[in-house]
Length: 569
Image (cartoon, rainbow, N blue to C red):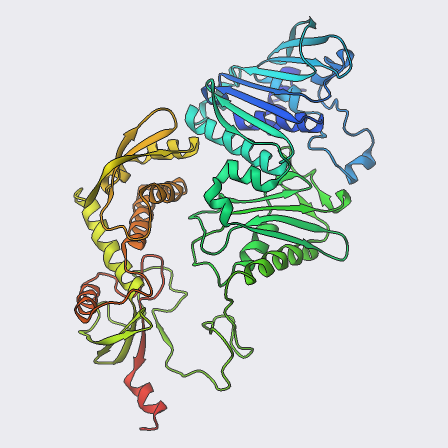
């Protein structure tokens, strides 16, 4: 096939695919244009998940009448003019690709009135081709209406998800931009009803309350730090007692730009090391302010990825600021200087002598599967004789090989996990009916997850039905919950299901969550009969050596080690 220059219309559609991936991409680009225009109030309206209609209206500076058509030309922008400007970008957008890319794959009307002028103007474009233009009366600012997105690119529209799922993605974009710019008032209207509104007070805590709710925000801790070079980090993080099942609530903003950064994520996770249980993640909204010349945002057309010129310094700044805040609120495990990175952490002052040699975890921490046991351990537990309880947390038992210390919560988690899994497999879950059905408000993304996994939820005892567009009427929950409210457990389970890759992982995640919230806790005083019953149930478990999250259920003190430590051999 001979080489030829592509038709401009085809080239425009290809270029648009790099910028406009889905309706949420359109909203992000248009809202960022509004922010660059100095808007203080931005309204986003959508219908059909943004596929049928997207309208973004702002009170910004507006576009002069003579520049309105030029704004639809590719690489036409008012934000940079020279190559050197790329070294110090301060605006959200700068490529001059958003408006022409959106216009190439939709029907678009751009209406604007510049500040201080008496009249506005509009242009109407279909598939990148101008249809009509003229004068119009309108308020100061800009309004962009996008209809029939990807109607002329059916291959792209075919891969979009449901309207509810696309609306959920747009909701995420708007809420994150509200956290990046708390001084701006945002409003999201979905199918004619307000779905989200931020106060625009300039206080990040107020914006957080609108996104995560006042209960979560009241518990969050303020973080602030500055280094000698003037780099600054600030924001809020949750205490170790407040956590999520996934990383969806960990967000970073660099110079007010919502970004994805593996570097910043590692810095925060390092700050929480030893304070959060494995598999749990905090709620984080961290801003980073650096000189524009120190960050490269010209990495990808979507501008979500950035590169830093001084990664080590920024990592240390964020890690130290978050860690110092957490240290002031939580006890920190102290590790002896002689201990290796894989050694268990000790609490309190470092002992003056070496630890006893009998600390054999059963199975080792690095064991990734609850079914793959070390060769030296039998698959089933030996018969154990319960001796008592230590610290209200550990059951002390004697067996043929020595003494066993059993973590009562981890052990009961394993027992409960296998029981609820079996009940779900047989479609006979134990359900606790609610005397008063609870109306639970759900985010658009949660509604989509609930619809996708409703059969799995029912098999584990979650009973209810939709009650309006964003409310779920919860009538029953799994039996035996100890420390979770029905609506709280439902929200946690939906978060877990949103990350599930297949039905097996989904079922495992739900069972593990139910088991955790229905198991006895550390600190619960148990009678001798209760301890014996729990140990007997653990002996009968298929995988008694670990809890569903991979933590060991027991430590083994061998008879030979005890004799050696007491000088008997």
